[in-house]
Structure formats: structure tokens, C-alpha cells
Length: 432
RNA sequence: UCCGCGAUAGCUCAAUGGUAGAGCAUUCGGCUGUUAACCGAAGGGUUGUAAGUUCGAAUCUUACUCGCGGAGCCA
Image (cartoon, rainbow, N blue to C red):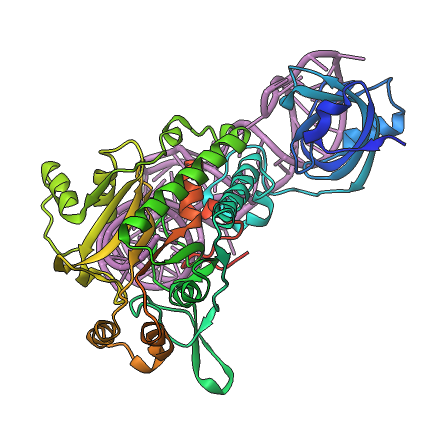
């Protein structure tokens, strides 16, 4: 019995007979020679079936294989520069495992609606598989970064009794006899409790926004990583953010060069992602907009087009800090030098990918925080536990949130966030 | 919620008031080195739904449904 192997490991088996299992990616035929392209999840392999080299039954099996039929193939591994992946299998045996009848996704182009409807099958394509492998490596890089620096993974609840920031529309559900509960839009408030207990923590999980956003930069369900660090001020927070992004991007472009090549991503732009990142204030951002002919009123939040203009001035992510407090969340600390400003920072990715990080130094003064909750018309009773963090040994602290899909989308050079997650959830779609 | 665009074969598209077509997929035949292989043949349609204009509507008008893109909101 030949050894069972995966396509990615074939280099070790040149000249040996092996058995592989997978699906038929594509098939070409020239009469008495069949070219079966096997896909096993780790790569593609061209398998040659010559009439005369195999039994009539095996040749017939190879002839009848249809796109995405599952099968097992045994043969001799050869180096072959003409074949995809550089190796080829001279088949001696082919066994059908299960047929595939009228596979919907043909080797020609398809529209996005059709592909999303068949997302469960679309995942089998080279491009989608490459994106998901990059997503996986990005997640691992994120976790490695924090784990290696003494952060503790801290899982916040997903069902919460109130709106975290009081602004976004949330998904609502009934929670037994306790009334409505909401799917979390951020684990941050809980992460602050974690930081007071463990010093440095990060949350990493799904978050939910019921906003009727209908753009290529929004999902209703997405993954976010949120570090929170006791005793970090805004500058420390920006130091952490740039070191973090540099590590993640550099690690992924090094480890996933093959998959980025499948996506035809120009990685030279990602190679620039090294600290220090430019740091500009909101006011300086407005100056840039003015120079580019944008008439922007002080006090508004930056829109997508504004972010693109600002980030296009630089060859790496840019950090924009000290926004007008009015457009930011209640828990952000004010700038002691200017009460109208919040000690907030957004990190804008290059190439028009926009805001991938939003963060701030948090308000640590009990009385100020209570007055902010009142100003925002939030129900104080829901924040009692949160205010306790200021009653019992309050310290300066800060953190930020990074959107995983936006980051993956940027690294991969995607034109829509929906390809960066296995099963995207969008305003008009919750299937498959 | 607002603005714009779209819906024709299983899929991607063409046909701009006069017999609804091509490529891919499927089925059959040919080819011993193919690279989204190629060559030949066949089957495949209530043109999103409803109404209207017209001798005649995929095409023009109106409404509706669904989708796509963008704005706002944000990661």
C-alpha cells in the first residue's frame, strides 16, 4: 500500500509511489491521456492517466470523473515544471469516492451574487482558500504578538444587558425573565475590568452591529481584537498599535508569500509597514484636507473619502489622534490641554482601506465619567459595575480595537470585506 | 433612511420596436502533454412579477419584488 500524503508535502516523495485523496478541481483530456487536477485542501496536483499504463477500468473511472467528484489516486511522484505546483503524479490507480453532479461553479467567471449564494462551495476555489489561510495566519500572528508580551486572553460576554457605547444599533433578543439582551458590539468595557485585574489583556471574538450599513467596508458580524493596558497613556497606546500592526503585517507577508501570490497582491506596499508610523492630530488632518481642496468643518468625524485623502499622503498606516470629543464615545478621556478634544486615535490603513484601528485613553476620573454618561443620556444603573473600576484604585489606561476582516482585506488587497470571512453576514444576507 | 445601477439558458453576457443568440457547464463523438486545452454535434428560454402603449415589446411607460454599488454609522 502506497503512503498517504498531502500535496504540500510532495517534494519529499519524488520518485516514490504515494496515494492522495481529494476532489477533482478540473480535468483535461487528449484522447488517450487524461489530466486530472486534484485538490486536497493543501494544494493542486496534476495527475496523468495514460491509456495503456492503467487498466481499462481505471481509465474509464478517470474519464467519468466530473468537477468536484471526490476520489483517491495512486501513482509515482515526478518533478514537472509544466504542471501547477511543479510536481506531477503518474497515476497507476484511480478510485471514485463519491460523484459530483452538475457542480454549479464552473471554470468560467461568475457574478458576485451567484458566488455568495454558493459561498459554501466557493470556498473551494484557489483564491478563497488562499484568503482563508491568510486569515488564519493573521489570527495566529495577532495572538502570538499579545501572548509573547504577557497579555492575558480575556473573553468578554457576547450577550450584554446594554449598549456599550450607546450609539450603534444592536441586535436584540429576549433573555428569559430579565428582559432584552443585546449581542455585543465591543468587549472593551469588560476588557477594562480585565486590565484592572490582570494588567494587560486582550479580547478576541465576534462582535455585532445592526447598523444598516451597505458598503464594502461593513459586516453585521465581524471579529475584533481589543487590547487594554493598565497604566498606558495615549502615546503608549500608539506605540503598542504600531508595533502590533508591524508585527502582524510583516509576519503574514513572510509566512504567506505563496498565498499572497495567488491573490496577485503587490506586497511591496505592505513591506513599508514598519514603525514609526506618522502621527498627526485631527487638526493637522484637516490641514491636509484643506490643501487637497476639501472644505471640512471642524467638529465632524472624518468620512471614508477624507480618510483616503489623508492616508494617501503616506506610504504606511497613519495614526490620527485627538478628535473632537463630541463625535467620540463617552468613555474617552479629554485632552488636559484642550477639553474639546478626546485622547482618541484612529489608525488609517494605506491604499484606501480606511480605519482599521480605533482606540483611546479611557476616562479614569469617577465624577467626570458619571457626567459623561449623563450627557450621553445613558442609563447609569447599567454602568455601575464599570464605575466601580474608578471607585477602587482607578488608574490611567488605554486600548484599541482592530477589525480582523478589514485587516485581512487590506493585507490581501480585497475590494470587499465579504471575502475575508468564511460566511459573511450583511444587511440583506444571513445565508448560507 | 437616502442616491445611483441592474434583473435574458444552470453560469457569464449579447440582441436598442420586427424569427431570442454566443462562450462556459451538461450529454455524445475525435485527439498520447493538456494549462480556464482544443475540434465537431445535441439538448437547454413564460426575457424578475403585474399592468399599460403598439399591428408587433427582452427593448418604451408605470408600479412592485429582489439584488449590486455608494452615502451616513463604524472596525
